[in-house]
Length: 141
Image 1 (spheres, rainbow, N blue to C red):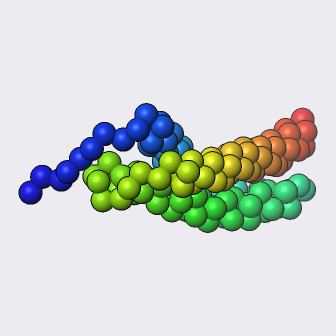
Image 2: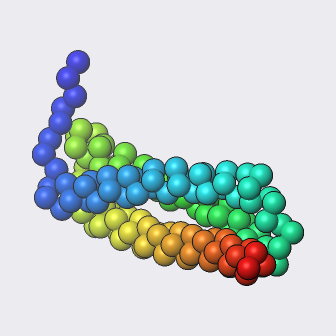
């Protein structure tokens, strides 16, 4: 049986494209944050615990764990928006431009905040590791 698909308004199509980009960003965040978490737990990083400034590394690691939860939460909101837009496209739900605009704005703010926090946590993690590496270089010279 074929689904009854209708054309969405230009605005709804734009919301769909934006949500698709957000979904892609979240997939990347999940992959990268998972990698950074594994790297932090790796033997290489655990050997750094004997050096100063490891508190910063531990704090950044804790923030990274919280961020991974926030990424999943944001993904649920983006998925809900994509589902809502699919329902509109398939004539299963009437297009409510105000509701779609409000949802897009809320998820947009969520993504802006998440992206900002993600960049901040990565910077803290990289700065902590760099500080420890500089300490190691100083001790070696």
